[in-house]
Each structure stands twice: as structure tokens, then as C-alpha cells.
Amino acid sequence: MFNNKKFNGNKFKYAIYYSLIIAIVIFVLNDYINGMKSERIEYSDFVNYINQNKISEVQITKDKLLITPKEDSGGKILYTERVNDPDLIKKLDNAKIKYGGMPEENSAVKNILTGWVIPFLILAFLGRLLFGKLDKKMGSGVMSFGKNTAKIYAENETGVNFNDVAGQEEAKESLIEIVDFLHNSQKYVAIGARLPKGALLVGPPGTGKTLLAKAVAGEAKVPFFSISGSAFVEMFVGMGAARVRDLFKQAQEKAPCIVFIDEIDAIGKSRDGNMSGNDEREQTLNQLLAEMDGFDSSKGVVILAATNRPEVLDKALLRPGRFDRRVIVDRPDLKGREDILKVHIKGVKISHNVDLNSIAKATPGAVGADLANIINEAALTAVKNRRNEVEQNDLEEAVEVIIAGKEKKDRILSEKEKMEVSFHEVGHALIAALLKHTDPVHKITIVPRTMGALGYTMQLPEHEKYLNTKEEMLDQICVMLGGRSAEEVKFSSISTGAANDIERATQTARSMVTMYGMSDKFDMMGLESIQNRYLDGRPVRNCSAETSTIIDNETLKIIKKAHEKAKGVLLDNIDLLNKIANTLIEKETLMGDEFMAMVHEYQKENGKEITVIEDSDV
Ligand code: ADP
Image: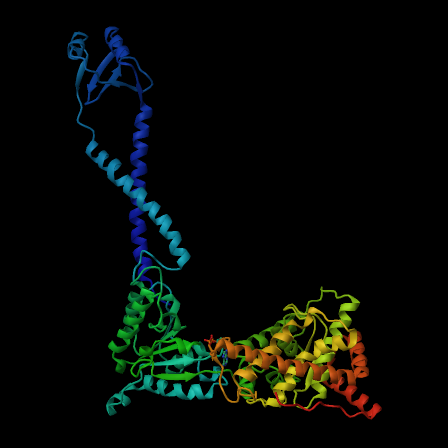
């Protein structure tokens, strides 16, 4: 790490502060001690002393008379104010007392000290106290305009290489060229090729963008500078721009190197269409654009930036010659997840029964950071259970912890609630088992979890899916509504336990109507679009209010139909529902195969074919 200049400068400043404070203390103490050595008397007493011949010497200053008494007065000097007494000299002469003036005290120095230096120092001290606190709060120096404080992290060797990044093969491929360029830029210069200046890594949080940037630096064996976009923008206008300048200056001194700007959207947001302009951000962005144009890429400085909101970035930032390359770092697929798990399990002792493929299957949608977390959670669980290696159970438990939170053992459900939860969960599971276009049930449990679930049913797809058919989506909605339907079928009453199911079912049904062209009414008309694809992926409606009403009606139609279908299936199989739910109350957790065995057994016993209501058009 660097930035030690600042520290030396501070030392010097502190030395001056301290010596001044010591000087003042000495000065004030001196005055105080002098004060202790003298005693004030009234002028009348002074005249009496003259008359009584008690004084040996008098020194006359501008405003005081310093009196040395004949008798020993404990080393003290007496003094009195000099009053307008024209006979003073005469009186002293008559009493034959020695008298004289005194060189003016170093009052000029004293005046300057008391009038200027001390107030100034007090102000400076208060200022430091105040701004120092602010500095700490903001994490950087208000007083140190434009200086890059410790915000930049520089590493000479990142120690990370491409082998540490798994499941991002395409991204790695695009970055290999940059590594080669940093290795031998002359090759590119010789042929007259324009060298890449920057690449934008785009993807959801935790997919390994920072890791990839570090790996590029590690592979190329060049220093790695990293700073967060938000670190540029501070309290004062102009500071961000100065920081950008400073960053580029430092980078060019250390070339060849990689500069990594994380969350570049913090400064790179589009400038237009924003009424409440933010001067500081704009200035910082302008400076960044200017610096990117200005620096000579043949020296081997490559800027990598990461964002999960590429759509908000200013167009100027993305034009050729700046961040003209876009490297997508998306969520890993099944193989990618398995590879990432393999990378992270390297340093962990594992038992022979560990099957990472099944863990990868159980974690669709998980990003690298989640998977790293799962391995770590599993290792922690193994330690907690006093084992010295990680077993498959630990990993599976870790997956559930990430999905649903830790088991909440202290939450005691009443018998009635337990029964309700059990029927609710078996409702989901049965619908999943009995309908055609659904994923198999992996686990049903009624052990409460910290993230709010009182129980849950876990389904796992057999294969990684990239497309969903309309039938699959309709059946998914049925499964989601199966919980509430079971409550209705069994208890003829309903509980609050279905809120999350309802939310998800509604969202799925709505997206069928608005985005996937799956309703007859709207044919293939797009009515919603996704914003922030790499973050929460919130849909934004772009249609009239009247159309919105029709969308709501269509959505309701789908939901009602699915609800009826779920209830129908459960009614037809009410004995099976009872049987499995009662087993679940007893065992608390049922694995997918146990559950399916019960379903098949029941079907065999009753010679019953499952009745599946045919989908009618939406
Ligand atoms: P991002 O910058 O995209 O938000 P990071 O690079 O900071 O994500 O990733 C956080 C952590 O997650 C990394 O330090 C690493 O341990 C793990 N990780 C993420 N993606 C991967 C991957 N593709 N391969 C291996 N580990 C990964």
C-alpha cells in the first residue's frame, strides 16, 4: 500500500503545533509564577511605608511601582498602581530611597502573543477539532482537497489469476487480449493497432467482476489500482475531478498497470434528462472523460470499470476510445456453479461423499459470492458439529441457510399451527408431484427458519432451464397456490401464511400477460419492460391506464383458474394429502424420494390415475 507522504507532512504539522502550545504554556506559567511572587498594596500604604522608612528601593514602570521592602517579606515584592502623584520623587528623595525606572517589559511580544497568536491558535485548534471529526465521518480529508487519501488500494501483485475465477469463460476470453497487451504492448504498437483503453465489466453483484479485474492484473503481473466510483464524489465541488486527475497521474507513473473503478455508475450516470443536476458528479465525469482521452495507452494503462446498471451510464463514457468494450459477467450456469464450488472447496477438507454437482443443481440463480459463502457456511457447520471434514449434509444445510435462513429452534408452533403449516407445504408438494409441467420436489420441511418461513417446499429442476413454456408457467402458479388451496380443502378456513406465494404467483401471471405475450387479449404486445436487469429486475409498465385495468383483469383470470385447478387436484386426492401431511407433522422433514414413494404407493393401492385439468386458453 502507499501514500506515506501525507503521514510525513502531518508529522511536521504536529511538531509545529506542539512547540507552539508548549511555548504558550511556558509563557503563561511564567506570568503566573511572577504573580505569585508579588503582592499588591494600596498607594496610601505605600506612602505610609515611606514615612515609616520601611522601603529600600522602588522601581517605577509605566503603570506600576515595584517596591522592595527593607524587612524580608518572604521573598515577595510589593507593588502598587502608579497614581498621579507629582510629589512622588520628592517623597522618595526625602526618605532617601533608591529609585529608578525599569526597561519596558517585553510587552510588544506579549501583546502580539495575547492579541494574535493565542486567539489564532485557539481558532485553529477548534477548527481542527470540528473538521477533524467531519473528516473522520466522511472518511477523507476536507482539508486535503484533491489529494487521494487512502481510498485507492494499490497492490503490486494481486496474487489472483484466471484459475481463481470459474464459470466466466467468455468474460475471461475477452480479457485475455488485455493481458497480452499489458505483457507486450510493443507488439501492438509496432503494427499500428489502437490499444484498448478501457473495458466495462457488466453483471449482477457478486458474480466476480472485481475478482476478474484482479485476475487480469495478476496474469499480466502488473500493479492493480482500485477505487470505488462513489469515493470520487465528496462534499465539495471539484474534489472528485481532482481525485480523478490524481488517480491517473499515479497510474501513469506506475504503468503498465490496471486501474479498476468499481461501481462506476456512481459518477458515470447519464447527464441528460436529469433536472436536479449534480455539479460535482458531472465535473468528475467530465474529468474522467478528459483523462481517458488524454492518456497515452501505449504506456500500458488499462482502465477496467464495473457496474450493474449499464443502462444509466453516459453515452460519452461508452464511445470508442473510452470504455468501448463490454464484458458481460452474468450469473453462472450449472457447470459454472460447479466450477466455482470446486475453486472454493480447494482449501477445505471434505469427505469422500461430497457431490458438488448436486449442490450446483440446488442453487440456480446463485452467484459466485453466494457459492463461496455456502462453502464457508458448510465448513462452519462442520466445526460446530465437531467434525474435521465437510460432509454433503453440511453443504445442503448451508444452501438452505442461504435460501431460507437458519433453523429457528426456539420458535415453538402450536399443534394447530403445525398442522396448518404441514398441510400448506404438502399442498405445494402434491400439486408439484401431480401436475405434468413441474419440477420435482426435493424436500418438504416444517422446521421454521429465521428468514420468516414457517416451513417450505424445495423443488429442484432436473436440468438447467433457460426457457419456460406457457404450460410450465401455469403449473408453477398452481404449485404456488397449492399451499392456500390445501388449507381451504382441509380446514375450510384460510391463514396469513400464503402472502409470499400470492405475491410470486401474481408476478408470474402478470409477466405472462405483459411481457411474454401469453394472453390472447394482448397477443404479442409488450406492456412492461425490465429495468435494472442486473439488480432487482423490476418491471416498469409502459401502457395506458385503461390497458393497465385490462392487464389486471387478465392476470386475475389466470390466478383464479390456477386456484380452482389446485383446489380440484387436492380435493381429488384428499386422502393422500391427509396421509402425507400427518407423516410430515411427525417427521418434520420429508426428502423428495420419501415423498414420491408415498405418492406412488397411494396410486398403486387405489389404482388411481391422477386427474389433471386441461389448460384452457387464458
Ligand atoms: P462483484 O465485483 O461482481 O460484485 P466480487 O468479484 O467482489 O463480485 O466477488 C465476491 C467474491 O465472490 C469473490 O471474492 C470470490 O470469492 C467470489 N466469486 C465471485 N465470482 C466468482 C467466480 N466466478 N469464481 C470464483 N469465485 C467467485
